[in-house]
Image (cartoon, rainbow, N blue to C red; front, side, top):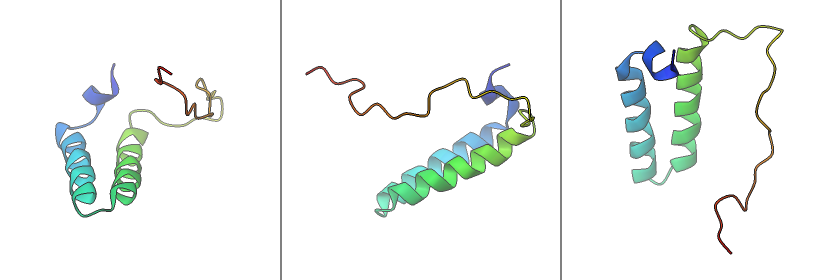
Length: 69
């Protein structure tokens, strides 16, 4: 089941509104961090961490991703 179906729609809407409001007042980073934290707490119930979890995605940031130069 997809993550969006596991959390109330209001949680996603609140996160989006928090991000938009933060960017509007020039605090985009804080809005993103706060929203990610809120979403992580909401998703922890349906997707609990276990000690056998494996990090399936790389942690590296590719600054050239999507560039067509």
